[in-house]
Image (cartoon, rainbow, N blue to C red; front, side, top):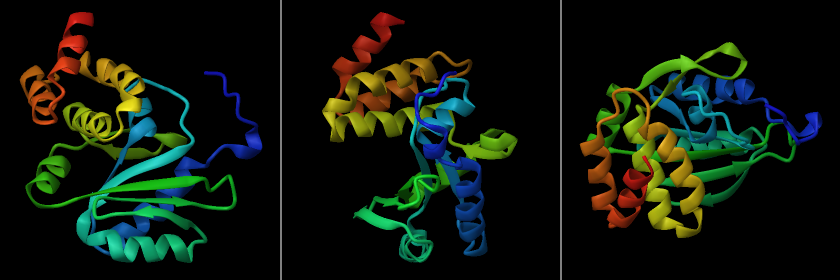
Length: 186
């Protein structure tokens, strides 16, 4: 893969993963990689300039404070998300999704370990859960639909993906027409 970003602007994902995962593990919180880095782990490389992670909702308060202590600026914070950018471009941007309740148990119980940045092993949600996150993102930001559908189409074609489970995510989000587009193209 050819990168068009100058080497001085490439985020060291392995380093950021080590820092964040170490902090979360010390607090007893689980975490998994989502977004572009997770898609790459599943064999669908695409350009990404940020590290996206999911962790438990109970981690948010201390995690946001930790990121700020590391020099990251908090760009956005809500009950389900926080976004952080470091002034050093090599540290980049790190975004978090926070999950709770039954979702937490289902997501982390079915997470897989795959090779990730720097050759280190990373935990990633199963493809169906990554698809659920993409479907929610399309619902929240319809302008993302085309890129998210490309990613979903790739994940959808992986061996063993549960089509019924994926369809339910589209139905729940009120995006059944997008499901129909996805299955027509397949």
